[in-house]
Length: 265
Image (cartoon, one colour):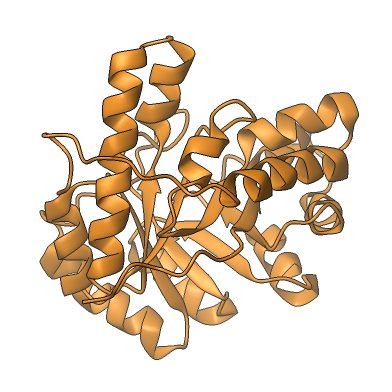
């Protein structure tokens, strides 16, 4: 069991999937996800995230090869827990792999990985990645059972799914938002106490990032779609710098949030 964390700077991972989405809409090589990765790093990103989907709807195998060979910051490969993706990860050996649920019909990742139900499948999968020196993250809901199962299968990291929190913010659901934030606070505490490094991400914007960034157990946020969208209007380094500044400002005032009754206590 860990004690309360020392407040440390918060890392920012920038997901470049949707640069590839735009490229693939027309074909060819422009815009280039690798160029976007370099620009994100210039703006203050600590790492780059790329999701290699089974249907290759955005990031391609060639993108992963180029990113791994040329990046100056850690590469976090998001992927499903399949034999194909395991082989790709073991061939490239990124800094980290984040295992996510994946359905071909979904627009984006919808909810956390069912670690409890897939415990027996995930344990040897995680072991193979860790055996290659890859840090393993599981994308989960901030739920006590999912956190306990993540520790049990040997994960190094959990990434808390902030999608529901962000939807409630967009809907101006103040009561629901407070409860969801409390659920994330409790989940982050439980994960840290279980010896897991705690990340968070999905749907975060300039308006929603600070309450999550104030949770002291969280050490990294992964943000993509919003930053890439904002880059259209003001450039990618500027969008990253603004997100970085908001995170740093929030980190100066860590939150004390009570756990909700339905959260991970």
